Image (cartoon, rainbow over all chains, first blue to last red; front, top):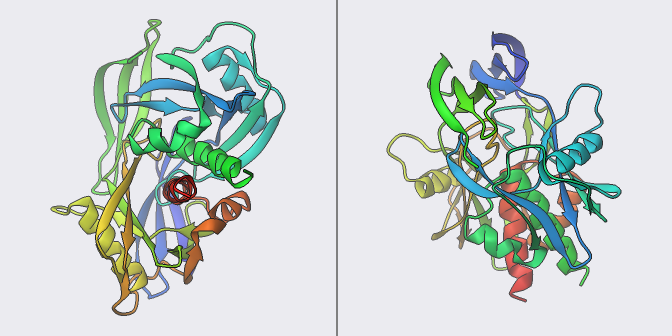
Amino acid sequence: MRWTVHGERTIYDSPWMDVRLADVELPDGRRFDHHLVRVRPAAGVAAVDGAGRVLLIWRHRFITGAWGWEIPGGRVEDGEDPAESAARELVEETGYRAGPLEHLLAVRPSPGLHDGIHHVYRADGAEKIGEPTDVEAERIEWVPLESVPELAARGEIGSGSTLSGLLFLYARSVSRG
Amino acid sequence: MRWTVHGERTIYDSPWMDVRLADVELPDGRRFDHHLVRVRPAAGVAAVDGAGRVLLIWRHRFITGAWGWEIPGGRVEDGEDPAESAARELVEETGYRAGPLEHLLAVRPSPGLHDGIHHVYRADGAEKIGEPTDVEAERIEWVPLESVPELAARGEIGSGSTLSGLLFLYARSVSRG
């Protein structure tokens, strides 16, 4: 059942996020203001090597105060295709250049809070071309894809988009035998 | 590498979300204001039946404009344990009462944007005790867990927390044979 949106007004506007109040009406007739945040799309990439390992960064997020494994990724900049953003972020955060990208998932991280979309790609044949230029990673490691469920169970992968992309790759690998 | 947070100020305050500006300094010395949103924790539950099917709701999100399968879930209210919230939301959104809950994952949906955490549980032995009181679901169905990777590939599961929880359950089921 769709909610009826009678209007939307901006509370706070910035190049990074817009905070809005939507005037929504539920199918049962209840009507109220609902907060939402509008943000730019993002893109990330799971680079997989010939040994079934994925290139991950171990990083701290000051917003959550948590450490965890994440795939490289970031915001889609003006004029970029999401695949270009994913490949660019891979170079900036790890120093690896991706081979051809395969689009895996379009993740909606928080569909009840913001309109962001995270495009998650797989890349094969990534090659080291230099050092990272970003300062996000504490460690950069090739992690066996088969260890992903255990890392998730241990709470070492927190990011919903990374969990989604890596568990999807794991599921596909085991279902293909 | 941790970023140094020199301070944080509120831009917008509400019972639903706080929008803040953090004064952060990167390890390379760059210093700038970083937006972030502080929200309440949320909890959801994947109820699984004896036939390996999971109880999902097919719903529309006005913020993203997208339809998709999601596990029942919602905000952790004052005084609630996340498991209580997950069980309550299951009843409200599907009319089913959960059996014992097992905590699967603590998902960080958007660690670069907000501090939300989504606790995802598994429940067995859910029983129908009435009709849904919430108006979120267009359809409520028992969906085979084995179909989750295909539904994800087709874009019919968008929510990062739902993808994480269901793909984690799928991965665990296949790795246990």
